[in-house]
Image (tube, rainbow, N blue to C red; front, side, top):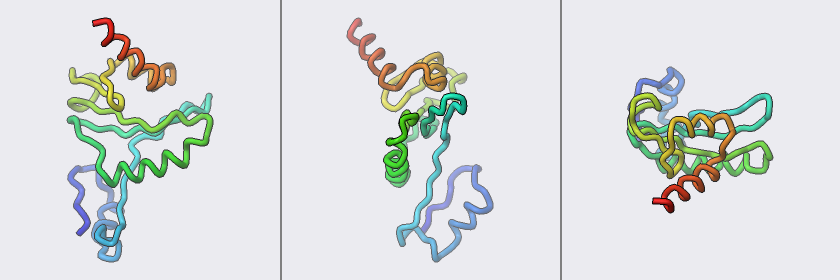
Length: 134
């Protein structure tokens, strides 16, 4: 049976989809959303961002669909990848930790990342260098 949504972000259409016996997940039909297709229209740079709060993780279904989208986009020279931004609580201002994929970052680093000033790889290498210095 198709799993009901467990948050208030549902739309009438998404609720309708979940109620259709002909579109049941037991037959392989699943849906997911990409939280953000983040871009700078002046430069053409873009990335896909999945936001997770309360240290939640990407579901199996979501991971598989996002991989397909990533494969389709990666030949575009302006595509800067698919990333997960995970919050310990809800958002950068609530005092919790912030993670970009698998590394903890600061709010300032998050802004730099969203401005396309620092890539994930640059932030990861910087974080590794800090750990070596300790």
